Amino acid sequence: MPYVRETAGKGGHADFIRNPDVQDFLANCDYLREPSDDEAKELASRFMRAPMGKPPQLPRYVVASDASKSDAPINDKLPSTQVGFLKVSHVLVDMLRYADLIDPINRFVDPFKVAEMHRSASPVTFTMPGSNIRYRGINNVRDGFRRALFDQLSLDRSESQTGQSLAHILVALNGNNLSLPACPCCGSRPGPTFDRVMLLRHCEACDAKVYVTDFLRLHEGISDFGDNSSAMTRMMNAVEHVMLAGFILHVFDTQPQALSDIAFILDGPLAIFGEPAKLSQRLQALIFRVNERLTQLGLKPMLVLGLQKTGGVMNHALLLERFLPDGVLRIIDDDYRNQYITGGDSPTENFGNETYYGQDFLFKTERGRIFNFAIPYPFQDKTFGGGGKAFAVAKVELARYGALVERACDLIRHFEMDLYDNALVPVALAHRHASISLVPGGKVLDLLVRSGLASQKGL
Ligand SMILES: [Zn+2]
Image (cartoon, rainbow, N blue to C red; front, side, top):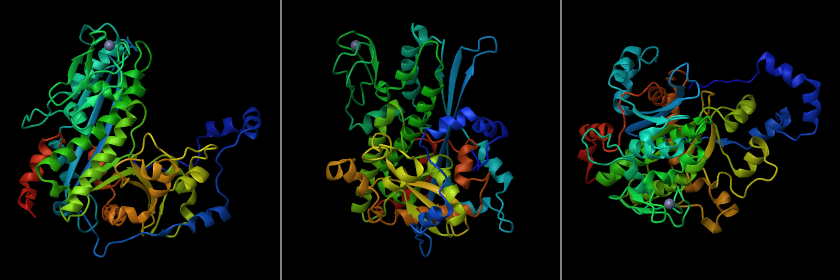
């Protein structure tokens, strides 16, 4: 997705807003308004100078991911019979070789070399039953979807056939003991418990098959005849983060020190929405645990970066852009967000309490480009100081992020020089279906190992 800057609406939209009925209606509503020039200047004064490493603190490798999906009718004559198709792509960028991609004279990305990278691409795909599809003879779409999710996530997609799957990662993220609060079929409590061996169980009450992947609760958004595209969006979001977790876990188990030199870039916020939101807490805990370990080893923490090109924070930033000097940064605290971005009348005690695992920042580079990035909360969970408001305060204390903010800014500056498809190169490459598919324990790991990270073992 390019960095689209949609400010003016289409003609039709403006006409609709000018309609007197709509104007009357709006007169009775409170909504977020564009800040006045004076307000914008005041807001701009609350930004700080963006930190900069001298020299820039760059990782050795960057792993960027992106996901796409489509929900298509299986044929034109059956418009309400759909299958969902999901694709997650990863690209590994070796920072030492990155320079080869760029023409040294005009700094354009060499399209031939990019094409070469793409030829070796094999993104991971998931095919799911949509409305009106009965999977494996199961008599309703919802249970068919549950089964398909289990089948797709328990496939070992690694090149070396390690026997590990995304379903195993779900168990690992839950401390190797994943309990469902209730059976998804009959609702009896508690539901079955899974471990690394048992990924499928029968409910003690109703004897229905229950899958470890029911933990994601994606099926709750599925109906027999309705449009199931929002469930597919949730699944895309969840799978991308589970794959990130899988990659981190595998490198962590084999050579934890390598993680200190890898930056992960995700296209989107560090958050998981809807039914699988609980996963966000697991991601936060995992990243915290890894970084604690790296600190014990005397190494710098790994950088996980969410980059958002659209959404409320970006819309706000674009309104403010011309008032902001170059090279400034702001951490988006909840008060600021509630007042200027979301305009919530009764804000929650902690923004994104159920969904977010990373903190948003606004960054205007020295070259004048705006980025909304996120870094994982440096906490095991959200219970700090009793949680709620206390966590909301603690999560925006810059010192807690150590050098990660500076490293994030350095990484963005580095890639900003050579925007490709108007996006940072690794993100653009991932979006274009990636050069290398990342499967837990798979190719990217093999490549990392082969390219010499293994030799760092014991550092
Ligand atoms: Zn049951």
